[in-house]
Image 1 (cartoon, rainbow, N blue to C red):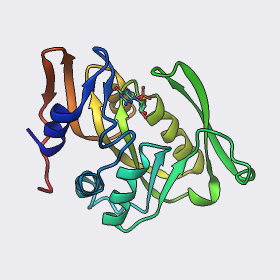
Image 2 (cartoon, rainbow, N blue to C red):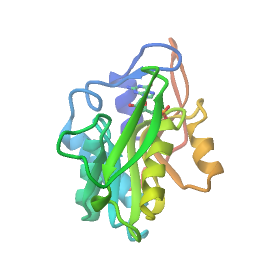
Image 3 (cartoon, helix red, strand yellow):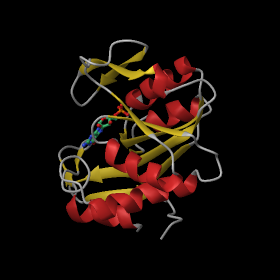
Length: 196
Ligand code: 5GP
């Protein structure tokens, strides 16, 4: 078991066969040292890709993205889920449907922070049906920048998000890949950690 799989088993709460709660270290309280380890691991997997920017989405993608940005020495941009009073001009937008909240959000990022020619790593906390990931990819494509791949903290491999991204030709790196969640426990697909 890698360090994240171990933490998920110790602290994760299975809310249903498809929803995992990990608010003790990722979705509410953040364990900084642990999050740094996650950020480093994502960064290591992309260190030869000449990444120039990391893109994530508020709020739970920000912590792992910042630590990956620290390691790769690149800026981190987070897409917003709500319109900002100060963010009005030069907006890139896309629509994201949330299966957990059952709402559609328009996400946005300022085009001045995401420009043509950039090499972008997209990071998020969970990959489920791939809606958030594809929405972020659309922002990068609208900017005319290049998507180097995705860095995911927890992938629920029994849902179709990974396949949607692979079908579009994207590289997907997930630190923990869950193949099944049940009252008996959580089963993982192999995900080898490079940095520890
Ligand atoms: P997707 O867009 O891939 O369907 O879902 C990814 C987004 O939904 C993530 O950004 C995450 O916020 C949320 N999400 C999806 N599944 C889970 C889950 O099992 N637990 C938690 N905490 N968030 C989830």
